[in-house]
Amino acid sequence: MILRLLIVMLFLSSNAYSASPVVVGQKDKAFTVETINIKVGDKVRFKNEDPFFHNVFSLSDTAFFDLGSFPKGEHRDITFDKAGVIDVECAIHPSMKMTINVKE
Image 1: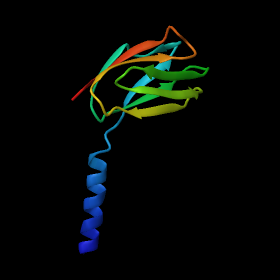
Image 2 (image 1 turned 45 degrees about the vertical axis):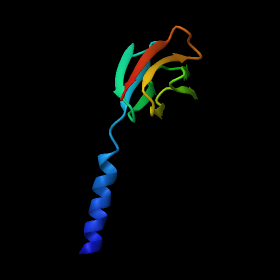
Image 3 (image 1 turned 120 degrees about the vertical axis):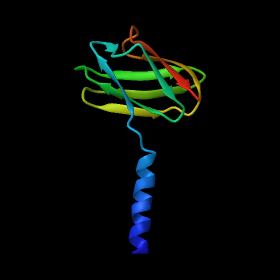
Image 4 (image 1 turned 90 degrees about the vertical axis):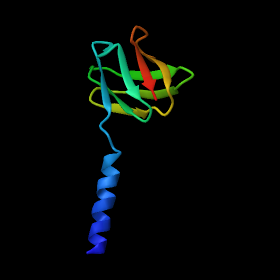
C-alpha cells in the first residue's frame, strides 16, 4: 500500500512540472507569430509546417542557440531559463524573424 502511494505521488509530481510547450509554427517562410510572451522555465516548440527545411537560431545575449536544420513535420524544443528579450531567426530564410519576451 505504501509503495503504491509513493508511485502515485511520484507520477503526479513529475506531471505537475511538465507543462505543454508553446508552439510556434513555421509556415510559408514565416513564423506563425511575430511575438510571444512566456515565463522563465517555459518551453517553446518550433514546428516546421513548410515543405522545406528551416534552421531556427538566436544570437541574443539572453538565449544564444541554434536548433539546426529540420524538415517538414519535425520540431525542435527549447526551454528558456533566463528573463529577457530574444530575437529569433531562420538561418535559411533571412526574412523569418520573431521575438520572445521571457518574464520572471
